[in-house]
Length: 143
Image (cartoon, rainbow, N blue to C red; front, top):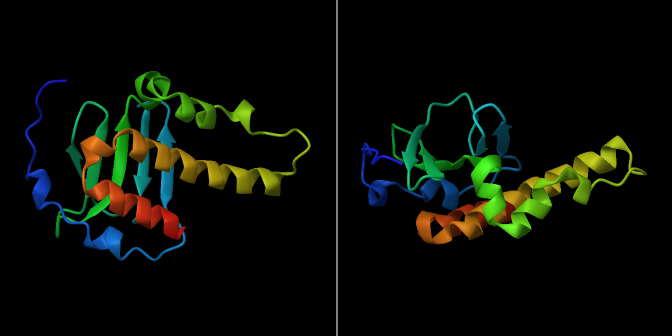
């Protein structure tokens, strides 16, 4: 990946929003055409800036106050998932879908898997994400 010029330094990004996160829902979205996984702790309608940390991981932040509000993973299914065996297990539907389940049960299991996937992404790239990784984990624990 070519060197991307960052608008601000990584250490200028703030974690206050994540530290004080007390909502019951995050926006979890996978775009199969772009092969991007997004985790947002704010409404997807709000403007965010993408701050790349490496080829795969980017922090999403609000431009008005530099608050970290999400995480983006590029090349998610094609490159990222195959690098992590435990993430592969969670990403594959056949590993957790029981044919006897009803739609309600399946919905609850999918929500649980979303959190598991989010935590495994953060754990896999904790050294790249740095200090905000702990705040992401705390915010996800609240859910």
